[in-house]
Image (cartoon, rainbow, N blue to C red; front, side, top):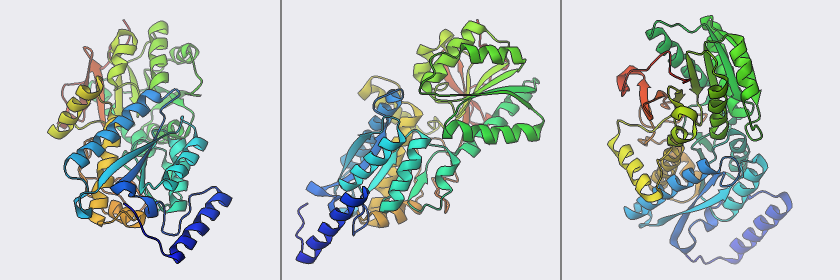
Length: 417
């Protein structure tokens, strides 16, 4: 869309650009990228994910999910309240680095993005949230669970998935209930976690619940997910501790390393139990892990298997990209669809108005939720849900809660053969 500027408007734009050059932030007179958001009749949504580095596979899946949402909106007629304006996805590679996330978020806003989604890693999302707040452009976190991202009084950032406190707390409840139903109560848990914002936050809430329940948590072992290359030493420590359960909060690559080490050391455990784990409920894990990851649990956000639309989306993803859709990709799909719905309801591409519409959303997601997405005044989705899955006979199956279970859990689990 071409715009005609008055001399005053041109002068204002020049001042904004000058300020940007001095400060390094994407400050504009109209708030975020509104002034250039629809160049060529398109409305730009920025997607920040790791396209290179250790988490590139997840990042690519998430970009794919976001693009599918853009395609779906455009195929359905675009943003109807704005005359059928089409969406455009502008992607940025965070490389899994917080500093890169900041600079790329700034670049996307300067390029005209009316909203941002991302980023998979909590440390990166922490920086992007600060950029979004400074520039008054809404940011919807598809995957990032560290609590402290939304404890700074931000009004432009929102989270779809459960936060770390919720994940750790509900994850402990799921483990205790599954073990209790099998008449094998949990006595001691070894907790292995990536020592970034995500893993540390998840550990804190899990630890609090374990203490209240009288469950011993030992050993507690942190690691650098980006650099770790072998988990044998850590699993030997777990084996020597006498713990009956190993809980793991980490990402995909390190999750596979855990499975390899468990297969080598063969500790006597009733379960390997993921808590918001980025590997143990992923289809690729069944191919990459020894013994197909048989018996591994994960308490996590997940695609809603009871939703026919979600199942159809996963099927379309498989046909288009030749691989099974990960939940993270479905969360990115949801983030874009939620933003598109907000733009339509706002009848505007002004980031501030889009932000207000996001805050009042009642979007029904593809990921499992307790109801439509509802954000509280901190930007947390109060209906964000958690389910527990288990790999049984090379298939990831929902086993908890019982109301939505596809099959009963096997506990103690067959984790070493």
